Image (cartoon, rainbow, N blue to C red; front, side, top):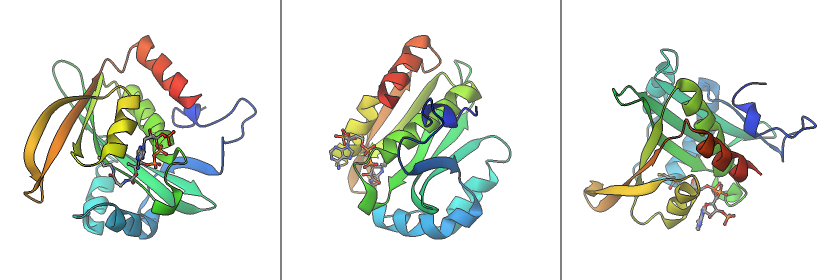
Length: 183
Ligand SMILES: CC(C)(COP(=O)(O)OP(=O)(O)OC[C@H]1O[C@@H](n2cnc3c(N)ncnc32)[C@H](O)[C@@H]1OP(=O)(O)O)[C@@H](O)C(=O)NCCC(=O)NCCS
C-alpha cells in the first residue's frame, strides 16, 4: 500500500467517503485555480503552481489533490527543507472548495502530507497562517502545531502571520496522533 493511501483506505479497501487523495498534476490546475482564487486575497498564479510542480521532480516539493467524482475539491503542498538538526517540511498551501468545507477534506490532505513528510525523513513541519484564520488554526492545533512566533504585517503588509511548528513527527507518539485523527 502506498504511503499516501495508508491513511485514507479502510480495511476493506474502500475510501472513507467519495474523496481520494492523489498527486497533483498540471492537468489539475484548471480546477485548482478557482479554489485558489476564492481562498486567498492574494492567490498564487498558475505559473507559481507550475513552478512548484516542476520542483516535485527533484524531490523538494510534494503536492496533493483531493478528488471527488473526478473533480478537484482541495489541495495542499509541502516544501522539504534540509536542516542539520533534521529535515523540515513547510506547508506551502492548503485549500478546500468552499462548497466542500467542514467535511474533513483538509484533514485528509493533512494526513497524507504528514505521511509524505515522514516518508521524506522530516522530523518537524511548519507553516504560516493568517492571524484571522481561526478555523485553520484549529485544524493545525489538532495536528499538534503550536504557535512559535508572529510575522508582523506579513500578508498584504496588513495582517500578521502566526508561525506554527510541530516537532518530532518521526516518533511513534506522532504516528499514534495521526492514527487517532484518521480514526
Ligand atoms: C482552512 C481550510 C483548508 C479547512 O478545510 P476543511 O476541509 O473545511 O477542514 P476540515 O473539514 O478538515 O476541518 C477540520 C477541523 O478544523 C477546524 N475548522 C476547519 N474550518 C473551520 C472553520 N471555518 N471554523 C472553525 N473551525 C474550523 C474544525 O475543528 C474542523 O473539525 P470539525 O469540522 O470536526 O469541527 C478551508 O477552510 C480553506 O480552504 N480555507 C481557505 C484557505 C486557507 O485559509 N488555508 C489555510 C492557509 S494557512
